[in-house]
Image 1 (cartoon, each protein chain N blue to C red):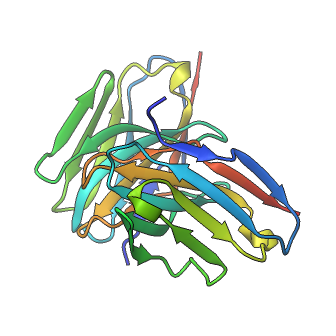
Image 2 (tube, helix red, strand yellow; image 1 turned 180 degrees about the horizontal axis):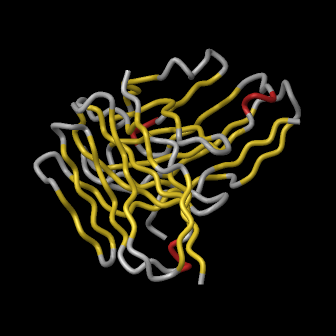
Length: 112
Length: 112
């Protein structure tokens, strides 16, 4: 499968725990995006990487959220001290420059 | 701040109908326009990309157009089928190409 891969697909965690999600973009894609989507809403932009550089972050991305893309390959999104309001689908997308963006299947986070 | 509106929010049609989904942007200064399909609990599947120099794209029974001057896009689905039932999302890329801004989507139900 040469598409965008996200792991895990589902994560249930207790409030206050830390979680980390991984995204493997399409191999030649230099741009990588993270989004959050709640029920009935469109995806909301969280952050953007060009190669290994994190160039834009949404105000939605509180200081409990951190993202990395070491060596411009895979990316991780970590949420510290999770809250029930963090429950959502976390989506990753990649693109080659300003061309078509491709999304992964998402990681569904449930905070109990 | 860029906002995207999709009309209608939901649509139910019998199989075989032709239909039009609408998308509008508060700021017409978008770079690319992309239409996606999302099945329940799944990630996004790219349908069509209209790049900055284009006004229209076609793929099979789908046709998307973009009028940058008015900040409006339409997705035309010909001869709808039950398998077309899904949520359809439009997204514009900002001028810097650092984010796709999404609408809330149109949920389509096609009955046989």
